[in-house]
Image 1 (cartoon, helix red, strand yellow):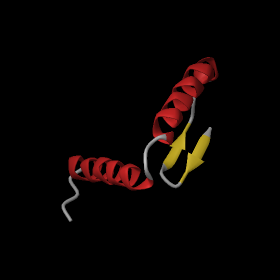
Image 2 (spheres, helix red, strand yellow):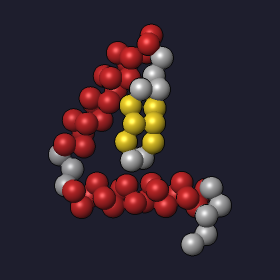
Image 3 (cartoon, one colour):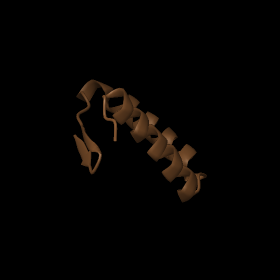
Image 4 (cartoon, rainbow, N blue to C red):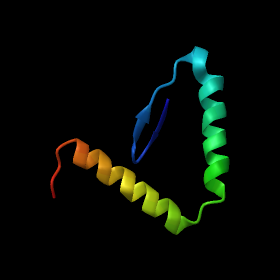
Length: 57
């Protein structure tokens, strides 16, 4: 189980290595990204989630 300001995730024990490998690969990819680029991508993703959920504001 992992939690941060964005949410909580629970991973079944039999998939823990698979999920950890994927998380490490994502972290390595993001390591080369500037903070500004990360923030822009993050904001775009959050805005899309809110829009898809019906939030209009």
